[in-house]
Amino acid sequence: MRTTLLMVALTTAAGVASAQTYEENLEKGAATTERNEMNVPFVQPGNWKTPYTAPSNWPIFENRGPVDRSPADKPSKVIVLGSGDPMPNPFRFGPAMAVIVNGYPYFVDCGEGWWRALGKAVLSQDAIDLPSIFALTNLKYMFLTHLHEDHTVGLPSFISNPFKFGVNGNKQVYGPQGIDEMMWHINAAYRIDRNEMFQGSIGQHGDGGTALGIPIRPSTGLEGAKIFEDDNVIVVAYPTSHGALEHSYAYRFTTKPDNRVLVFGGDGHYSEGLVEASRGADILFVEGITRANVEYATWGGATVEEKVQTISPYHMFPADLKRVQDESGVQGIVLVHVQNFNNPDDFDRLGVLKEMQDEGVTNILSAQDGDLY
Ligand SMILES: [Zn+2]
Ligand SMILES: [Zn+2]
Image (tube, rainbow, N blue to C red):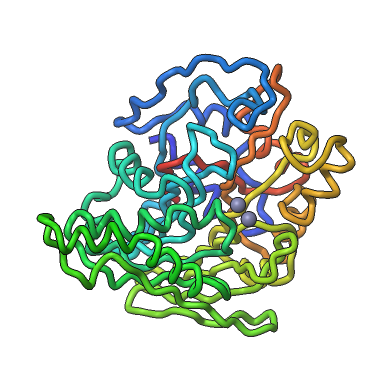
């Protein structure tokens, strides 16, 4: 497969110029898995300024399906389940990923469409045995970078759908302060459905269908705090900076069998915590927003200046990401939470990636739902 070049690029030592260029990424974008038959064209939306069509530049079809960009010699993988952001882009589910170690998944963020994202991944990515990995009994551990709705709105699916198909609860959702309260309310909100499932003819156990919210309490310093460990992974949390949110975190996963270091930055701009989380890591999964195209953002103000002022505390502009890479020595970067704001007349699916590269960020790729890293 043509994934080899990019796999090598991602595993190249920090500071070494990436082997990949924008053009190579573009060419790479044409690669598909054998099971990719999902590029069904949509009708071109009009130039309306609504969240559904603005920027009216969502592609008529994506030019590639999911690919396997993971190192062949490392059994631990990351699958991107949802590469989107709050915009209702029909090609990208809400933010969601999973670290897969010894055939077991550890989920990071639970965006819109989480349950269907699993289904799409299983149908479109056959490089690993996803039906076994996503066995309903394995859907247990969730780590939330922050409590914005686009990263949490899939939680009812995470909790209720496996229960609906016969698997009890015992789920653990780790997240910032407030996750215990959020889970209490979600559990309460679905009480009627849950009760019907165990009192009605479906006959599920009464002790399923809920999940425990576990607030993490990382140290206030930059050394991070270990919040989870089992036979497969160690997870350390670092504080990040995301707008006016009081608590948001990056998670640094170290996989035990093959010692991969995989960092999930969540949303936000430059922070020392993100740098520490990413120090010497194999891959940082992180968001990015365009600089040149921010004027096409559908929020943040009426003028470009207002938008930059509003959006920059929340999101990662190219100079921010360059600084994170330079200071942390992270070896590879994968863009998720893709914003895709662009001039409607000049749609470029990889515009964010190109701007990051123009800023000097190296070894960087743009993810799509179903990709493996
Ligand atoms: Zn977000
Ligand atoms: Zn956010």
